[in-house]
Amino acid sequence: MSVLTVRETASAIRGGSVTARSVVENALGVMEREDGRLRAMVCVRGDEALLAADAVDERVKRGDPVGALVGVPVVVKDNICTSGVATTCSSAILRDFVPPYDAHVVERLRAADAILLGKTNLDEFAMGSSTENSATSVTLNPWDELRVPGGSSGGSAVAVAAGMAPVALGSDTGGSIRQPAAFCGTVGLKPTYGRVSRYGLVAFGSSLDQIGPLTRTVEDAAIVLGAISGYDERDSTSADRAVPDYAAGLDRPMKGLRIGVPPECFGEGLSDTVRHSVEAALDVYRGEGAEIVEVHLPHLSYAVACYYVVATAEASSNLARYDGVHYGHRAADPEDIIDLYSRTREEGFGDEVKRRIMLGTYVLSSGYYDAYYLKALKVRALIRRDFEEAFSRVDVIASPVTPTTAFALGEKTDDPLAMYLADIYTISANLAGTCAISLPCGFDGGGGSDGGGGSGGVGLPIGLQLIGSWFEEEALLAAAHGYQLLTDHHERWPSDAA
Amino acid sequence: MAEIDESLVRHVATLARLKPDDAEVASMTRELTRIVGYIDCLNELDTDSVEPMAHPLALRNVFRADEVRASISAEEAVGNAPERERTFFKVPKVLDTGGGA
Image 1 (spheres, helix red, strand yellow):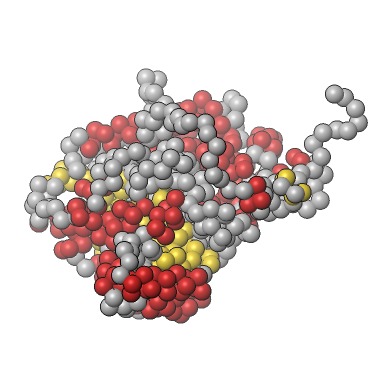
Image 2: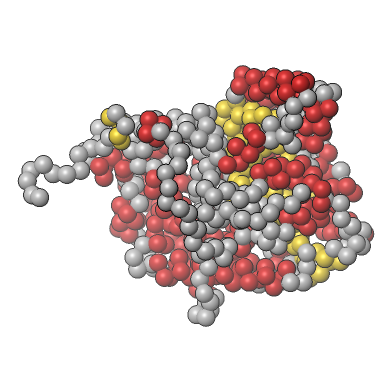
């Protein structure tokens, strides 16, 4: 594989040893070769990318100042607005939507001289854990093409795992960056709520959504986080706090690092292969002098129920805007305006989106609001309190990202509740608003977590989750980076699986 | 807790501006019954003395000066409208012309 990391790419282009054009041509070549099968991309803008690369090369040649991500190819989840480039949310209702503006994060990427190659596939409106709920295509896991890549940022994870780009942006409402990162063997970072502006991110659950990078290395995630973070007055929940130099703060001794391990994350439902890999990762930390401390998250088992009330309530409100009037699909020959709204939405939304709008409308409706929505907000406060308590004693919390490795295509599509329950380890970070990262910590040896199938190679990737305290991304990234310095799981490619 | 039946599902669908057919109402009733049955586990917790948490950050209202700034043009704003007239979004008639105020 000739794909370099974000750091290597930017440094080579800045130093003039390679051109942005050659880097972009190589990335587009990988897409051309791999994406006919994998279907990670919703759209590819090769010509524009090459023009942008030439402009960057021109500036490097002249000796002009260039940005931190100079010439770095980047792909962006298709629920993040890109000026003049269709942003579909992988939904039929937004098939032809072309935003007139860039999301804050896209502005920041362009300002840092990164090069946008295209948009990646997702579960419709980011609702799902497998990228199977996409009106565009089904994306395949590059490690085993009979398995899902995870979701909802499945296209972003596959693009990075398959070498189409060294970095992708995703969004994470309940694990949608971390879970596909785990299933595809990449790094996935969900920043603290408020760290990255949500301006231009198509809203799903506004008190939960956060944009973050998927990369091959923790160092790359730190570089990209530095580029996209910071205050933006157009998002009233954007935090007005200084942005540290995340990449410069990565080298911290593991000795003395306090890692909390909640037994609640290692109970029933966790597969043995995932458990063993995560425990082996803890041994790596222990060997470096980190202190492993038992902490408790007593309300973890209520997180899924709490989340599916809060997230769907917010979604039902946010998705009210798709009405056939302002943009997107519009039903033909409406009898009146209510008929226009109802048929437009019935025709334009997929099953999972409708299910969540229904659930969210129900929990907010008269007579049920207190019993469900208000109750869930109180449980959410208890979940946050659990984390506050834990972070008074430890620097980071370690857990699996998912109970199993990537499941088979179609395995959970008929059972929405089973799909929701698989999010158990990731969603509490969204409810509490803390930062969290997923990084590769092993492989299941080719058997698959269900014991069947498998190609006999290294098998499917397994993710380690580290959760950090609010706005403590520096400590979180340093802890994750320390692990990658000592291990090589992140250096494997899907071609090793064959 | 609450019994979810087809008439409740039809009521919620009306509130949500969806128009499910009979088969969809039936499957939605089954699925929502199961999901809401699971969500009922929240009632195991005593939350009487807990303040609800609507948001992860302790944010205050954000104020700014009320001044004219650059923004997208009206033409751009209606650029994605499925039906429009000049710079207006077009909808079916919402007022009865047959009299009244």
